[in-house]
Amino acid sequence: MIHRLLEPKLRELAGYYPVVAVSGPRQSGKTTLCRAVFPAHPYVTLEALDNREYARHDPRGFLAEYRGGAVVDEIQNVPELLGYLQEEVDARPEPGRFVLTGSQHFGLSQSIAQSLAGRCGILTLLPPNLEELRHFPSAPADLFTLLWQGAYPRIYDRDIPAHQWLRDYTATYIERDVRQIVNVSDLSLFTDFLKLCAGRTAQEINLSALGGDGGVSHATARSWLSVLETGYIVYRLPAWHANLRKQVIKAPKLHFLDSGLVCHLLGINHPDQLRHHPLRGAIFESWVAAEILKNHLHRGIVPDAFHYREARGLEIDLLLRSGRDLTAIEAKSSATPASDFFDNLRRFAERLKTAADTLDRIEALVVYGGDASRRRSAGRLLSWREVGSVIGSRTQ
Image (tube, rainbow, N blue to C red):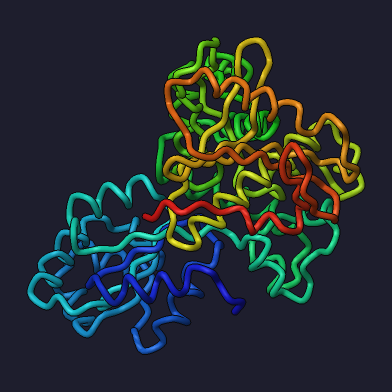
């Protein structure tokens, strides 16, 4: 097992709460982490049909077998167990008794909020960020190989070819997980929708256009996009609603959480093909956004993150707000710094002078595909290799 940044926060919350829940996509390393941190806890998975039926039909009997505590995997398969777990931990509220994992965060979060409010700490584990991924001996040193392979740990832990693993992962996700969340009569139509979304990574979401291109209604497109977000395939980056005197686009931006999955869905079969692909910049932007999200979540921090775009063209890829400080971030896949890298950041700083929302400090930052980081008069130029240094301070 590689070191995961979430481990200290997981131990900390287990010292406060009788239950800790770790959510995230399948194969992100949740089970491996929880079993390593709590080796004395018995392990039981609700993915197994017999365990699932036992927990569903005799929840008190099921929990009686684990009175000393347990790591319970894939808790979203039996959400009704949480109500009985509440009774159990209310009777014996020792910290760290139960550690839960789940792969569908909407249903899991709602169930915990209803049944375990005040009794459960909640954390999110995504596939490794760059800092964590470097602990694998086979981690790529080249940017485009890294983007093409993505960050799911099984690819590196078992040395499985990325294209093979991602193909199997996609098929399993669609054929099993999607059917558990929503009634999809035509899985091939959903597969096409997923590929359409991949082609729109790092773009503002237009549900009408997405549904029209996918041959489904606006309502179905909204529902299916929520399914992808529920399974941690994508996330929606909201627009910044600062009080500026310009026409600001308020649609959220779509980002895939794993660049390798995007490349697989787009039919990019080799890192060299990605190097010259028309969506190279969009894939790099989504990777930067996902890395910054991981940098926060894996430390138990929920980032205050947004994007910004005006109808007439000015846009900022990512804004991180921390109190009265703002970091404005642009992502540039080029390995060679260009004179116009900071142009939008300068214009955005001018816009903020007219905003009613006063900030103490604004930092301009460009994350690019080169190796050398340096300070410029207009802001900071940061190598993709050092993206892990971008982190705010808003705690969960």
